[in-house]
Image (cartoon, rainbow over all chains, first blue to last red; front, top):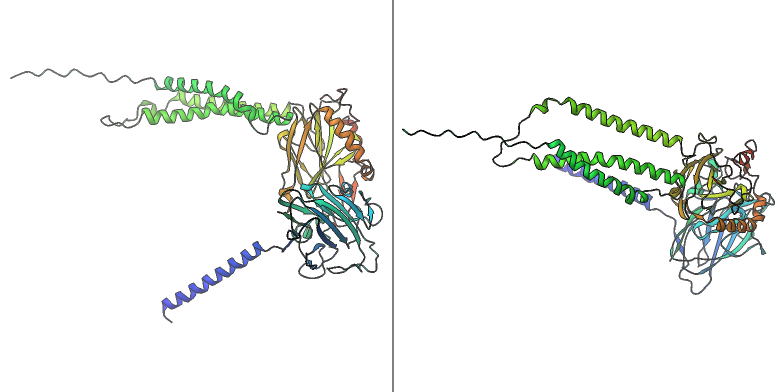
Length: 220
Length: 321
């Protein structure tokens, strides 16, 4: 093989390698959980059904705690990016499948920013995290002043859910509330309970990963 | 043979006194610019004068500018003068080095003397500003170096956690809220702590900035001087939502503050009962998901009394810093 041919082949291999590296890097940088779109629903209110699970049960982070959302077609989707219409009432049904603990900051035991909050059918505005099964997670949207503590299930429940998506046959608490989405914008939401088991102060892992315990309300 | 009259010698053009020219230009411009800056621009320098600590920062910046402006003018005026006056002209021979190029002892001494005076003056000014002023907005640790003279300041505990600030008012029933409200014309002591990682409480327009560290009570003072809003930001990279860890605080009239405090205390009464006993620091459970918000009882409640944080009657004007 003469020299020009060798140079051409080496150059081509080099370009392909660089291209693959760039492609992989961009794919990683741009990777994101899917968004579930609720803007196509006609009329008010928009129904939003979500669940929290103690361990996702599969995938790369099978031991991580996570949120899931039920798409308009009725399928559970592992994402925390939800598209909602602006200035619209959203009726939330939250199925909470995780066990709880005392709150690090009991201030988060107060329900704020939502209408008609109920827990297993009973109205509630405050959760004493030192009593009962404590609090497992919160659903909080700071810019909308929304905070809803989600009481934990009995840690000794025999029908505790082990893998997502959990079903109504598994031990759970049903929390319902409504809120108004307000003006268009990106509203970050998160769980404020340090529930990243095994991470320092509980705030690593799922607490810092979009798609698990924090995400965005994409209000348009 | 004709005789040629000799050409009378031309007296060289008299060189103007460049130093006095420069000095005059510099003096006039500096004398005009300094007061203009101090009175027109100075009041708008960041971080503003909403609180005494911020006003102190603003004053310090103003003084530094007033000193720096003549120095900058001296350099720029000399540069422009040299470019214009000593520029190369057609028909005029290139200037050659004169006696001054071999050294001028007076200029050297003046240069060393003036710069020494400026630097030492700034050193003294900075030291005096640190020592005096009745406190600092910078966070001075659990035992403040410069103690507060005010007998009864308003104590606000700033509790940082990933990724929010909450505020506890020990002298107003001990309620805890997401809203930071302060009364005007009042000395405020911020006790800053964290429930998890290191954060930083930065109330920008108040000139208050203090690290929020777990198991640590960091103290910062200010005295509110005018009503309005101020921004609060976390200034320590603390995780994925660090950029979203901000609030808006408000300085309101004493009457409005009293109304807000009374209303909020009543509204949060049931939630306040569930809060842990007030403490300057809280020991979180470092293992994570196990919760826990434990008052460090060894540090006790006594410091509140030291700072006179008994219920404050703002209307009666007891709270004078």
